[in-house]
Amino acid sequence: MGKTSSLLLRVALAFAFLYPAYGFWTNPNDWIGYIPEFARNVGLSQGVLLMLIAGLHLIIGLWVLSGWRIFIPSIIAAVFLGSVVYFNQNQLDIVFRDISLALVAVALAFGSRR
Image (cartoon, rainbow, N blue to C red):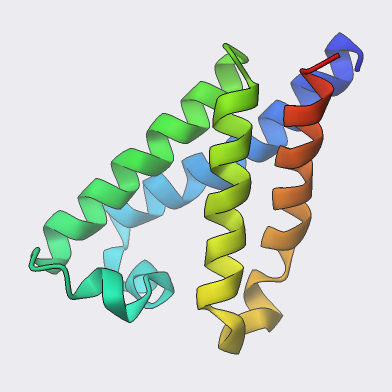
């Protein structure tokens, strides 16, 4: 994979994680519905849970953007995005784009193995 292609894929995938991280901090009520019920019932307050998930999004997004050992964050991102689709199938009209983004993550992971 070329350097430009890799950079564009990394920016696209990173944006899919950095924007929700921002959204979790600025408008948490808009995002809580995407968190599966079992995750909301882990014993943490909604605010703490949202901040932890926002932090996870931030870490994944920045790691993907950095390109450092890209295979690892790409696989994590693919699994994360796949789980978003799986646990929000009732909202497929909204989360269908996550399938494409998960495939971008897989392409980055396998493209890094050459």
